Amino acid sequence: MSELTEYLIAIAICSPLFFFIVAVAFRLLDNSASIFLDNEILVDSSYVSGDLIREHIDNTEDIKLKKSLKKALIFRKLHNLFMILAVISLPPVIIACFLIPFIA
Image (tube, rainbow, N blue to C red; front, side, top):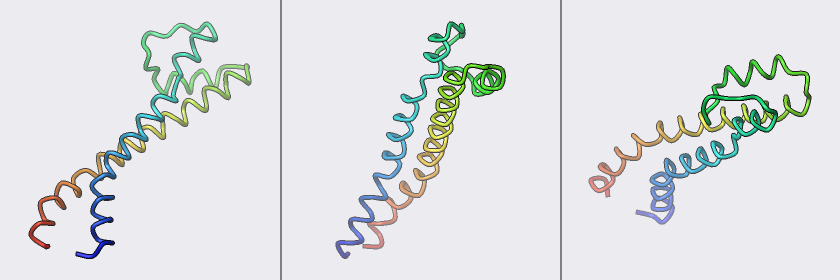
């Protein structure tokens, strides 16, 4: 195998882990419960639902709170996107790990 192929295989094997690490970083950036508590809005758990965030974005007049909640919602959506990418990229990597020894 050429060097390029070996590098691509290494990158492909590490891609689910990379997507997972990026997803965790976006989850840590999503501090919606902290935003609610800072503005004296009581929440039941540390994981605030997206519907509740959207409801408060629509109902609040505070521009700073609205901006913070929109940013938290974007981080939440990015977290979900990268988790989906991690899950989708895992089966091809597993299949490739079994097929590469037979091809080489």
